[in-house]
Image 1 (cartoon, rainbow, N blue to C red):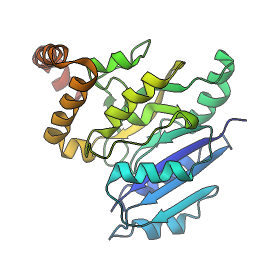
Image 2: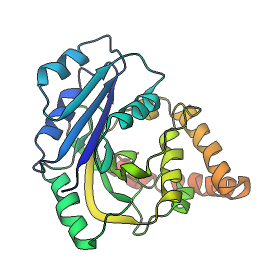
Image 3: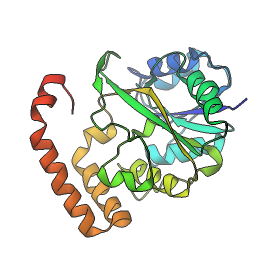
Length: 254
């Protein structure tokens, strides 16, 4: 049976971490390990994690160089066939999501894809559904797809562990964008699950630092897709934002 390593990195997340821990614990699929790397939180995050008594887990709390450094550390501890990054406040969409991915999806394709991906629901601080992620996962995903933006949420992007290469720490806010592109360039088989996989907490580090994150993404897109292509795609992004305000206002989508 395939084993999934769920990776959660935390820092001062006492108000959101329990929801994530509970979601992983309630999964119907038994072959899951939970790797938790805490960045020496100054609140009650680590004590909450310890009190939760998580089975099949590896937990450390120590200073790090940021979220992507913590993710790199976590992968070194992982032993699963696949990696899923589920941050504090994020949850699996349902209690059978992992079982649907591993038992059902892999039996359909009858091989082990390098990457599996799906859709993402956005939730508020209380875990209540707000809306589906505005950028919809494409039917067929390749590394060139991200020239249109990050069409698949990092949390809904599940990668075979043997494919993994470390996150580039020169990007502070958008290394996940760069990493996903690198993984797709390396992958031979990418599988669309056609499932909603993740409930994603509306507020996160990248959202809180949106301006810096967008600048990094522009640099990343220029590196992979060229300066001219990136410039014209960003003109389209502006047009898209202007022509969709009615839908945004009606649904609360961002």
